[in-house]
Structure formats: C-alpha cells, structure tokens
Image 1: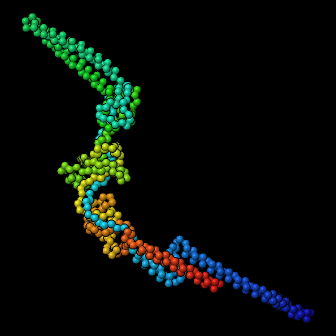
Image 2 (image 1 turned 120 degrees about the vertical axis):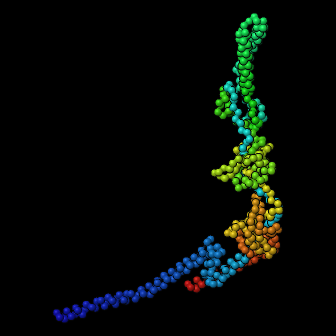
Length: 471
C-alpha cells in the first residue's frame, strides 16, 4: 500500500510536466508565422498612413481654399524655410507693382449752382364741367382726349321746355306793357281834368299809383324773359377753359341735373402747365436774393430716372409760408409744354438754376473720395506716383464737381482704380503704357508660371521617391 501510494504521488506531477512540454512544443511551431503576420500588418498601416498624408497634401494644394497663397503655404509647410522666404518675396513684388488707373485733368470753367428736388406736375386749371340746369342730354359733341378751346360746344341739353317758358314770358310782358300804356293815358286825362278842377285829386293819385304798378310788372316780365334766355344758353354746354377733355362721365339720353356728382367731363389745361416742388428753407435766402431784382430763375424738369430733360421753364412764385413739419417751402415753375411731355400729376425731377460760379476748378465726380480725413483725391505726380490730397468741394453738377480749395488747374487726379492705391503708390495709365512693355510683362509672367510649375513638379517627384524609400 505504501509503495502504491508513493508510486501514485510520484506519478501525479509527471502529467502536468508532460502537458507543459506538449504545449510548449505545440507553440513553438506557429511562432514564426505570428511574427510575419505582425510585420505584414505594420507595413499595411504604414502604407495607409503614407497614402493619407499624400492625399491630404494634394487636396490642400489643389482645393479652392488654397489658391496661390494656400499652395504656397502648403509648400512652405512641406519644404521649410525656403518656401516661406519665396512666398514673402512674391507678396512684396506684388505690392510694389504699378497699379493701372484712369486719370483726368482738373479744368477751369463755369459751374452752375443747381438745386434738385422732386416735383409734381400740376395743371393751372382743372375744371369739372357741370350742367347748370335740368333736362335730357341730347348730344355730346366732344371726343374723349380731345383738345378743346374755351367756348367750344361740348354738349346740348333739350332746350324745348325753356323755349316754351321764354315765349310764355314774352306774352305776359306784351300784355303788361299794354296795361301800362292804358294806365298812362288815363293818368294824362285825369291830370288834364284836375287842372280844370273837374275831378278830385284822389283819383289822379290813384291812377298814378296804378301806372307805377304796371311799370314794375313789366320789369318783372322782362326779367323772366332774360332768365329763360339764359337757360337756353345754359342748355348749350361750352368749354369754360382750354385744355384736354377726359373720359365722358354721362352718355346722351340721360337726365342731368346741376347736382350731378362727377359732372359731364373734366377739362385739364396743359399749355401752359406748372410744376410744384419743394426746397429746404436753407436755400430760401439765395432764391429770394436772385428774384428780388425781378430776375427769373430757370427750372428744368427731368423724367423719373433723372436722365432725360422733358421741358424747360421759369420759376413763377414761392409759397407764402414754410412747412414746419418738413422745414421746406413750395415753389411753382411754369412750363409752356408745347409737346405735352409734362402730364398732370406726373412725378418729375426738377433742377433750379440759382447761380453760376465763374472760373471754378472742376474735376470728375468719381475722383472725389471720402475717408477718415474727410474728402480727398489722389493726385498723380510727375514720377507716376500718387499722393493723397485733402480738398474742399463746392457745388456738384452730376458728373462734375467743383473744388473750392486743395487742387489747382492742370493737376491730374485718379478717377478709376483708386481702391488699390495708397500714399506713394506707383501707377500706370493704360493709354500711356508701351506695347512692348505689355508683351514683355506677359512673357515674364508666363516664364514665371512655367518655372513655378516645374519647381512644383520637382518637389512632387522628390516626395514620391522619399515615400518609396520609406516603404
């Protein structure tokens, strides 16, 4: 038993040893394959990382956010200090390049002092033709939109009822005139008998009163006749003023009355016509100074776009008070309007010529700029550089601006391309540039672009070989 127990105790640790040896012997077989797998996996990761780096560089170089500056930045990041130095030198050369501009010469001439304002075309007469009696509208003699003169017949109301009334009044007048004549003869006889003391004086006085009564009746009859004659005149409707008739408001056959709402037609006077516009109360004094001596100020009416002149006229009058809510005063200009270019209630732009400045320094309006120092211009010097010159401007007339101080006649100023300029900047005028210089500049630019492209290709080729060597 003891030997068996010892044998069993001695035999138990032997099994794990054998298993250990077996497992170690079994693990030694796949050991080299696991190392190869690890090396192959590391190589794949390195290739993926290198491909991502190259793709990122390509995208950064050719994506629109890069541009010339972006490409230079990417190249400098890849190439180091040499690329950075090249980019700074390119920016400096770009800043020192001569900028192409357009220039103009300051001239001397007359500058009109013009006040501009919005105005409304207002007719001098706008009449609604109303019937002055009641009746049937028989005829309409005008056409819509027709030009009529004062006194032209426009329409006819049925005159027959008023003609009958006139004849009746004339008969009454004839009767009363006969009674008056009889009363006068009786009065004459009574006065003769009274002189002979053959009649009482009371009867003579009574007859004299009867004569005066008949005289009053005859006057009343005559007034009735005149009334009916006037009605016959009113039955024939005429134009109260010259102008253009509008749309017909009543058709023939309708019964019209003096209380007709819209009347029969509206006549608007077009020749002459006026324009009412406003100006600031600050301009009132210089306008009054020009008109006090009897002078007439010219007014020009322009269309809505303020480019086409419609009609020229004269300032007629000013309003008698200033509008306190807006601080403006109304003015009326008169225009003959022979071509009927001004239409009632039309909005126009008015230009009132107040004064004319003699021997003013004049430059194109685009040459005057605004900055922190105020208004200034870029003056071109003899060496084709510019300098900033503060100026004080005067009246402005569209594309021309007068200069009060800061600029002399004959000096050249920049009118286009000033947004790229600064003090002392070099400029070139396209009209003055030689043709050969333009070609040389183009060739130089093309050569520079080719050189830059070649350099970029070389750097890309070097990066490609470097990546292959690392692999």
